[in-house]
Image (cartoon, rainbow, N blue to C red; front, top):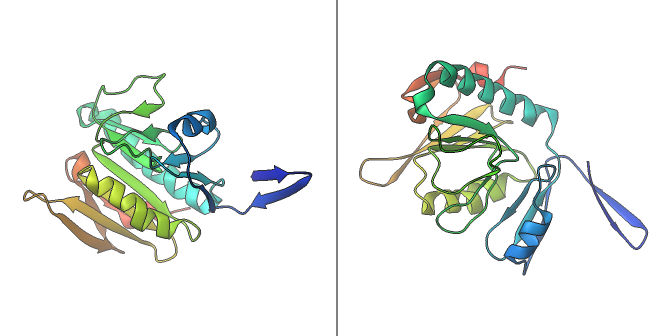
Length: 198
C-alpha cells in the first residue's frame, strides 16, 4: 500500500496506479529511490508507482522462474532480475522494468542499478500504468536501442514482442497462444500459458 499524507489527511493509492511529480531533480530521485519504492525518473519528472496487484506479481514470478531456470543451465546468456532493480540508460532515463535480463557477470549481489543497455526488458501492463509503459517508457527503451522489449497484457492475455531487427528498426508482433521465442535467451520458446498460469 502506498499512503500519501499531508496536513493530517491521507490518500491511499490503489494497486497498479502511479503519481507524477514534475520539475524534479536527480537529487530528488536519489532521495526517494530505495528498494521499497518503485520510482522512475526521466530527468525532469518522477513517476512513483503504488504496489502491484497479485495478478501482476504472479506473472512476474512466472517469467522470472522460466528465465532463471533456463539461465541456471545456460549462465552465459545473462542474469534475470525482477522489479525494484533500476536501470540507468544511455539517454539518462531511470526506469525500473518488471523484469530485466542483463549480460552475464555484469552485476554483482550488492548492485541496485545496471548502468548500460540490457539485453531485454519486460513490462507487465496494468490498467493504471499501461499508457505510461506503452508510450513514455517504450520511447525510453527504443531510444536506447534495447534489443528486445516485451509488454505483457494481463487483460488480453497476450504478449507484445518488440525486437530490434538487423537493419536497426523495431518489429512488433503479438502472441496470444502457442509459444513465444525469446531472442535474449537464444530463441528459448516460452509457452504463453506458462506465463499466465496462476
